[in-house]
Length: 142
Image (tube, rainbow, N blue to C red):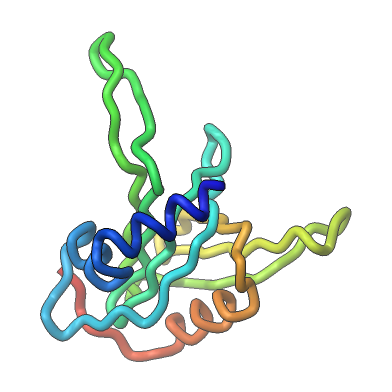
């Protein structure tokens, strides 16, 4: 059901390219290569959102704002991750040994931060695109 609502939102807001440019800082020569509906694994559990792959960065934004406490009050914010391509160290597609249909993509930055993405509708395309992004020359991001 969440993916149907997401599709409606994408159409209403003008498509993935427009949402990408509104959500993240971009430079004019930066091109969006692809976008993937998926989950990002966090210490609080998986977060549903979109992973964007551009000529300058990998960028994830949650579909919905998440709550957190700040000074005793509950605040709401979208969960975002941005990794400039020149700071990518590795992209490792993998699957669960216990359940091979559970597939993940581990992304490691040059400062050894790990990000685990899962639940892709098109896992093979996402894995290929992320591995290509690791190998390709990049546009410097903002």
